[in-house]
Length: 271
Image 1 (cartoon, rainbow, N blue to C red):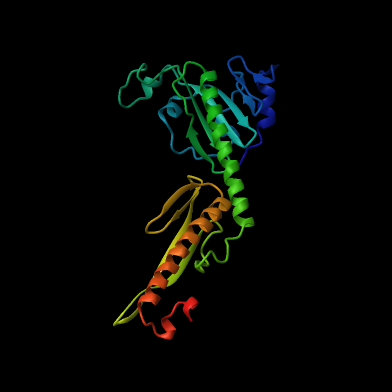
Image 2: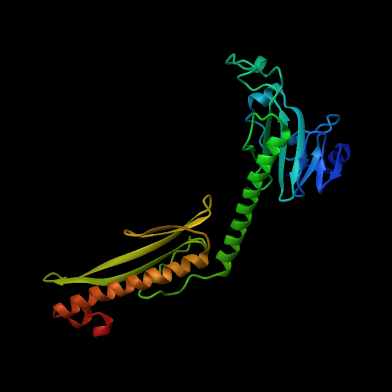
C-alpha cells in the first residue's frame, strides 16, 4: 500500500524543468518518472513511500543508505538510488575492506506495488546516480512492457474461446482449467487382430507459463513454445490438429481395408 507522502516529498525536492526532464543536483529523469525526494535536507527512504518486506536487510541497509533519491514511475513502480556509506566495512562481519565493499559507490533498488517485492537495480556499484538510473530506466521499460503484454494476454484469454472441435480432435472437459489452457483428444482405431479391435488416444496439451508469458503446445511428439497470444495458439492448433486428423484417418482406413471388421468396429466413414 502506498503511503501518503508523495506531496510532501515533491515539495521538499529541489527540482527544475530542463529539456522535458526533472532534475536534482545529481540526477535527471525522463518524463515517465517523478522525483519524490533527494535534496539532502528531508530525504526519504523507499520504505517511507511504499510498503514492502523490510525483513531481508542487506549490509548496505545495516550500514545506512546515504544520499537516497526516491523516484516514482507512472506505472506504479518506486525506486531508490543511494550511495554506499564510507564506513560500510565497519559493519561487515567478514572483515572485507571498504574498497572490496565498494564504499562510496551508488546502488539502486525498486518496488513494484503490484507484488510489493524489493528488487535490486540492474546496475550497482556505479560511479554516479545517473548511471544507476539510466540502466534502471531501461530495465523498468522492459518490466512495464511485460506487464502490459500480460494484461493483453489475460484480456484475450477471456474474450476468445477455444474451438469446440478441430478435425477429429475435441476438447477434453476439465473444470479446473484456466482460460489459457486446454487439452484436445481423439480416440481412433489403431489395429485389429484375433483379440479384437485396439484403440489409441492422442492428446495435445496447451499450457500457459506466466513467468515466461508464453504458451506451450505439446504431445508425445510435439513441443511448440514461444506463442504469446491465445489466437496464435488456436491458429497453430488448427493447422497441426488438421494434419493429425488426416493421419488418424489414414491409419483407420488401412485397418478397415486390410481386415474384415465387424460392423461396430468400422470407422464412421465405412458404416
